[in-house]
Amino acid sequence: MNCKSAKEMWDKLHEIFKNKSETAKHILQQQWYTLGKEAADDITTHIAKIKDLAHRLSMLGETVSDGMIMTKILMTFLLSYQHFNTAWESTSQEQRTLSNLTARLTMEELRNKQHDSQRNSAFAAKTKQQSTTKGQQGEWKSDKPAGKCGKSVGKKGTGSVTADQRQAAKKQPQSLKIKMRLSSDKSRQP
Image 1 (tube, rainbow, N blue to C red):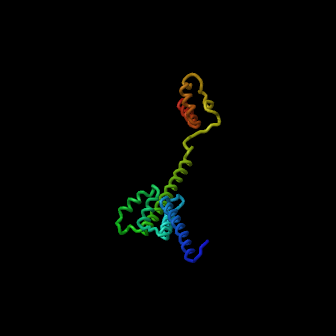
Image 2 (cartoon, rainbow, N blue to C red):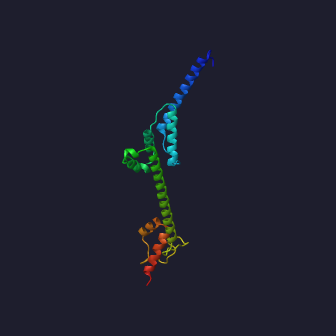
Image 3 (tube, rainbow, N blue to C red):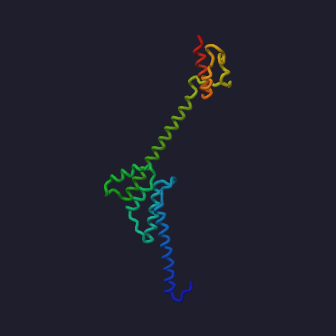
């Protein structure tokens, strides 16, 4: 620096620092207004990020009240927590504190995780049950292509297949075609 006196140097440093702090304040304000909850963050982490940002803003002279922090927290949640906002608004004004909000949201997150875990377990059990019962009711499989396993297929008379039936059979899965042939063969037997 090209300063002739200590006061001149002090004034220049003060001006540089002031410009940097105004820029930092502007950047932090942008972060405050654009901050959203990341999917990977749990509620505690998300709230800590908001509180940290509020603290850094207050260090630069920008006042951030607890009410603003609570509003920011509630605004940044996903749709799965929208019912919580309604419940929170119905609480008394004395109970609406930042620590109470944090505790309630943490409990809500635990409930949601338990509910998701139970739902996933139930889905896995249902899927496993379906896969073990499949194929137990006479579902036959054949190596032969459709139309080659029954004697009466393509012959004239009561067992012949019409053109409409052939078109419908082309659209059906192979295992269903075999089931249909087996049931029609059984109905023709005396």
